[in-house]
Length: 187
Image (cartoon, rainbow, N blue to C red):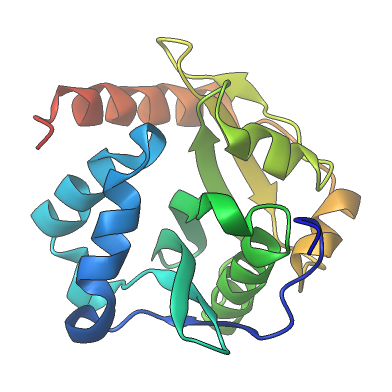
């Protein structure tokens, strides 16, 4: 099977800590790009309140990826998305973003915010939807994205959204928060 063939039995759901936590954390530990996920998600006790979206092979129930996000009153911050190497390019990432967007819309969120390491596969993934970063953080280690969700229902809708940089005051607060996170000890 070609690795670009879509997965026929893909399902996306919210993880249940008792059933999925160990498997999600093992997948996260396999990637340098998301190695801090396990530490941050446990430290801030987000498993019970904001379990990640997970993609499963519906035929066997095998974990194919996860997308961790935190929902605010008016926006959603996307923290980590990881797709298992053997499932990349097969619709897994897009399906998880569709689930994230559906939940954001259900909760009344109007913006999607996230950051991506420039060399990370995530940059190519998000660029595939026509998204462009508006800035880099203070250390120029992340590309910053802030997207309006007006008129967006699915990941494929992101390409037609007008992207604007937020005001400099927002950038300063965001960069300050990133500096605090960078000081957190990794485990």
